Length: 202
Image (cartoon, rainbow, N blue to C red; front, side):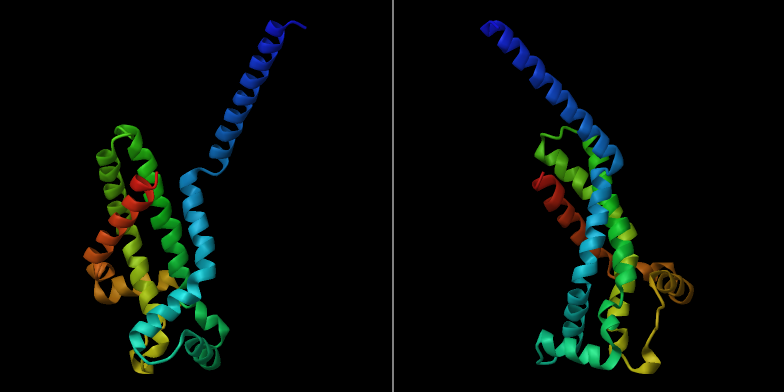
C-alpha cells in the first residue's frame, strides 16, 4: 500500500470516528439534555446536603454556643433522624423547577445573541436567573419555614405536611404576595448565581 493510500485510509477512518462521535453526542443530548441534567443533579445532591442546610438555618435561628454535632444529637434525640430532612420536598421541587428552568432558559437565550460576547451572555444569564427565581422563591420560603418549625412553640408551628401543603396554605391564609416575601434578595441572588455559573463559567 502506497503512502497516499495510507493517508487516505487514515483520513476516512478519522472522519468516520468523528461522525460517530457526533451521532453519540446528539443521541445523548436527546436522552438527557444538559438543562435536565442540571436540575436532576441538583436534586440528587440536595438529598445529601439537606441536613447541613437544615442545621445551618437552625444554628442561625437559635444563636446558641453549640457545635454542629451538638445540634445533630439534639435533633435526632428529640425528633428522630428523619427530622434532619425537614423541608426536603421544598428543596427538591426548587431544584427540579428553578435550577432546571434557569439552565434551560440560558441555553435557549444564547441562540439569539452573540455567545462570544460576554455582555450578551451576562444579559441572558441575568434574565434567565430572574425568571427562574419567580418559580424558586415560594419553594425557598416554604423550605425555610419547615426548617425552623420544630424550634417554635407548639402554638406557633405551621406543621406543613410537604411543599405543596405549604404553598397552598400560604396562598390561602396570607395571600399570593406572601409567597414572595424576601423576593428582592432572592431575585438578586438568583441573578448573580446564574451569571457566575453560566455566563462566566461557560
